[in-house]
Length: 118
Length: 114
Image (cartoon, rainbow over all chains, first blue to last red; front, side, top):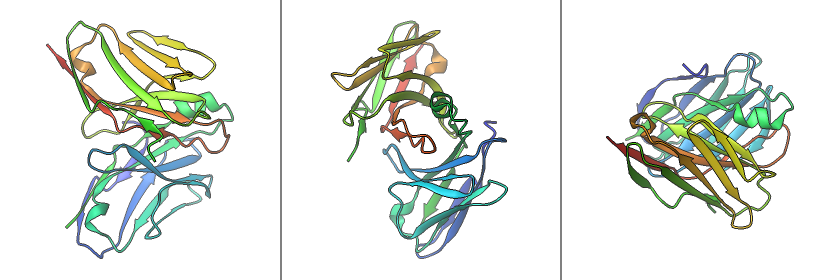
């Protein structure tokens, strides 16, 4: 158990639907990152939140949105789903101690949510 | 635009021999590099890292080499063991406190043959 919890582990839904993926970061970590891994692709950065605020944005579609709540858990909302959205979605957290080397090495991933759009 | 590239999707190595995984990057501003290991049904886990001010970092059986002029890094595993069979991701980042976004490569699947 890495300490980062992602739910659900698997999700099957139809095109056009909306789903919410949930992430609880490791205790004490302030930053949450969302990544998408499609078939044969690397991990594509979607978005980062730090202590409730959006900090960095990557290749995130307008149909996707995220937020981080006061208890630091995060949700990734995917709407108007398309077949191409089928992927593994990973959440990671880090402490943001101010020591960059420690923070980057301390990136902890959850086990992911496998989304299948049919 | 793939800024971090792992051109070998897969690699097979005999147990006990050396495994060498390669990674190239295009952004010369990257100043910190990491390797992550991923088993099936699990998230990636941190393996080893190197700062751009160094050219080598060693941790047990794992050594990472950085060649900044070639924008190339490699991970050496010696000796290779069956438990090393996994997908290995190379990642890079910029110095920017509060934004520790990592840019990942596409991964190399390493298979250790007993």
